[in-house]
Each structure stands twice: as C-alpha cells, then as structure tokens.
Length: 107
Image 1 (cartoon, rainbow, N blue to C red):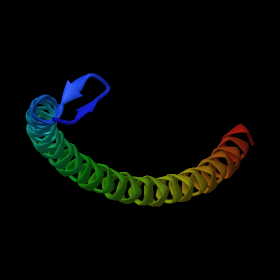
Image 2: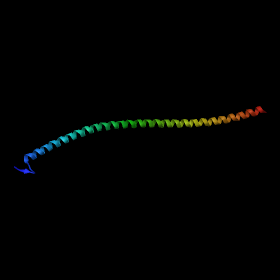
Image 3: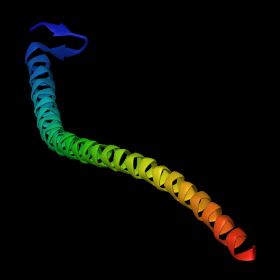
Image 4: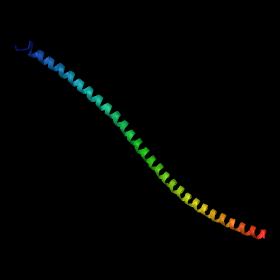
C-alpha cells in the first residue's frame, strides 16, 4: 500500500471525510445563524423605517400647523396695530374736544 506522511490512503480518506462533514456542519450552522439574524434585523429595520415615516408625517403636520398659526398671528398683529392707530386718533380727538369744551366753559 501507499503511504503519504505516515498515513495510508484509507486513513487520508477518513481524515478528508471528517473535515468535510465538520466543515459542512459549520457552514450549515453559519448559514442558519446568518439567515435568522438577518431576518430579525430586517424586521427591525422595517419597523424602524415605518416609524421614521410616521414621525416625518407628524413633523410635517406640525410644521403646517405652525405655519398657519404664524400667518394668523401676523394678521392679528396687523389688526392690533390698526386698532392702536385708531385709538391714538380717537384720543387726539377727545383731547381736542376737551380743550374746546374747557376753553368755552372757562370764558
């Protein structure tokens, strides 16, 4: 029989078979671990993406509401300034009328 490095051909075949089976089992376990791990990771990423989309929608709604509120506040400020101007005119008229009335009474 042939001997290579002190082992016969059937011993080399047994060693190759053991390494092949052990390697196959290792690859199978690695494949299962990767598939299960990536499926869980994929589901987690999908949930995260959905939550980000929902958050984005909520932020857009809040921004739209804030813009409408800012427009209303600007309109109210303009109206308030108009009322202040009208009040100043009225106060001036009242002072003028008071001066006219008191001047006439003091004569």
